[in-house]
Structures are given as C-alpha cells and as structure tokens.
Image (cartoon, rainbow, N blue to C red; front, side, top):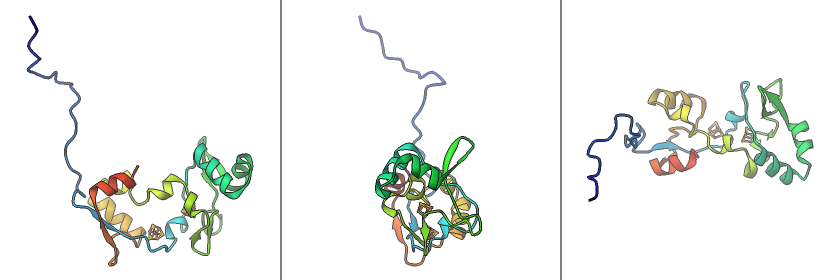
Length: 151
Ligand code: SF4
Ligand code: SF4
C-alpha cells in the first residue's frame, strides 16, 4: 500500500518567494548618453575573463596586453583604469564609450543593479546621479524587462 503524501511541510522547507518588488508596475528610464556614469568620481568597473577576451578581440590586441594597458588590480580583481585627474573611464572619449558594443556587463546592466532597486529611496538616489532615470522622455520599462536587463 502506498504512503499518504506528507500533509505538512517541514518548517525549514524552502518556499518560493512570490512577493512582487516595489517596482512591479515598471520603472522609467532612458539613457541620454550624457556619459556621467563613466566619469565624475572614483569608481570601479569590474571585468572578468570573458569580457577581457571580447574586448581584446575587438581592439585586436592580446588579452595580456589589454590587462596591462587598460586594467588595474583591486582587492584581487581587475577593474578598468580611470584618468586620475577627472576619473574618466579609460574608454570614455568625448563623453562616449569607445567600446560600447563590447562594454562590460556592469555597464550593460546599469541602472538595474540590486543596490539601485532595493528601495524607492535607492532608486531616487540613482536618479540624482543619472539623468536617464525618471527622465521626462523616458519610457516605462516593465518588471519583466527590468529582470531581463539586470541579469
Ligand atoms: S548617467 Fe545615466 S543617462 Fe547618463 S550615460 Fe549614464 S546611464 Fe545614460
Ligand atoms: S566601459 Fe564604456 S560604458 Fe563602461 S564605464 Fe567605461 S566608458 Fe562607460
């Protein structure tokens, strides 16, 4: 005879979180290309092995040369270099990213970072740094799109 299925889940059973985030109705954003997120204050653009490979191929140089010319080590990780005088990212020229199609994941996923999405307050603080957030000409980005962009 078969056993009855358990009727009561153990207290530590991992339940799927079905709570929708505060931005469930979407958020407004449109990048104006102002370039401010690539300069202005000291920052880090973390770069991994596959991104180094893609960028070196794009720039037609060896990965080792890419690492030497464009990155520096911080806490055991590699970050793109920046101009020590104005904090421009090494790839920012005339307010434009010169490697845009191959820019690192960190750049691609801005502003959809967990730290920016964790609360309305955090999103408002992001808007103070990025004119594309809640810009008057911005479009509504749905929850599904936000989740896709943030990966
Ligand atoms: S600061 Fe915002 S609007 Fe300006 S380039 Fe960066 S993402 Fe785009
Ligand atoms: S790689 Fe391009 S998008 Fe990323 S910080 Fe540098 S200039 Fe900006």
